[in-house]
Amino acid sequence: MAHDHDHDHSELSPAQLRVRALETVLTEKGYVDPAALDVLIETYEKKVGPRNGARVVAKAWTDPEYHAWLLKDANPAIASVGYAGRQGEHLVVVENTPRRHNMVVCTLCSCYPWPVLGLPPVWYKSAPYRSRAVVDPRGVLRDFGVELPADTEIRVWDSTSEVRYLVLPMRPAGTDGWSEDKLADLVTRDSMIGTGLPKQPGGAA
Amino acid sequence: MTDGVHDMGGARGFGKVEPEPDEPPFHAAWERRAFALTIAMARPGGWNVDMSRAARESLPPQDYLAKSYYEIWLAGLEKLMAERGLVARDEIEAGHALHPPQPVRGTLSPGDVAQVLYRGAPTAREPTGPARFAVGDRVRTRAVSVPTHTRLPRYVRGHVGVVELVHGCHVFPDSSALGAGENPQWLYAVRFSGRELWGVDADPTTQVSVDAWDAYLEPA
Image (cartoon, rainbow over all chains, first blue to last red):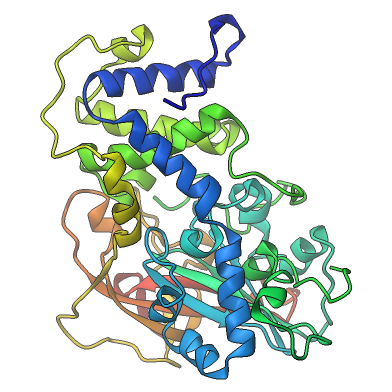
């Protein structure tokens, strides 16, 4: 069993002790199978993450038919690349343009499109982001080092339902003829949340 | 509930957002187990996502603000289990089962995980009638404070917006969280201007939407 249990209880934090106690009780009562916990953890540490979303974005950048399908009916379009399921049952893709920049938040908790982005980062779940994204999105973008033209519309999507939003960022200039794989390397997690922009060819973010 | 501390949109004073370069999915071994225990217990526990959120939101405000994310998950999980008599306080203190288990509807097995995650828990339901609003309609959100679970944030309360998307019919969290049935309703993305929400001095380029169920809205 791949438990992270060490042997000296005196060095464990209250949270570590609490979780260990809970897991033991729930296992002894037959409510959970620790091996299933291992599979859950491995899934979200190794398999489900922002590389999934990056593949979807790169495909949309190179394939006009896929691009149109993704914006019209995101779930089947994304499932066709192999991604679906928990916390992504109802996906909507919103596209950045020179006039409109999209940003996604969950002010009430931490709703996030797991199948394409994995588990949310700490900042996404934190009070500073949840409180400010809807009232001062340009200030939040500055926290990420992003400055957009003063006349660009900033369109914030607060994920208050089971609908999950994924931002389709603009394809960087100077990438004509690039393969999907090469383009996917430019697509950052933050560019699909809307707090960042894709990397530029040549290295600058 | 509305007006709880979890309802953070527009709150002031929380400071800068601090991105972490190359952030890992988990920051400690116990976070991995807390995450997985919470996911795995939903099947034997029999609760839904709305009940889970309601449990986390009902923490005392000072605890909600002081706890880390997975500490909030753990506290929510303990509350849901205690309410159903699945685990007793003395068992957590002892670190061992002391009482017989409750009969449960099933346990998540390692071989089920991939399929359970892939299937997810869709909330869309067949409509039983036409949508009340169409894209482009002006709507006003209800100006009420709700003591039980709801998904209408306070910062849009009583404000006028425009329907931008019609998402179909979805399980209504206000009912579902109480175990009062799914009560599916039409769900809309409703867009508000920054000036409507935050006043005439707000950045004129800001537009904010929430997803709002039919019961949250009236024609404007």
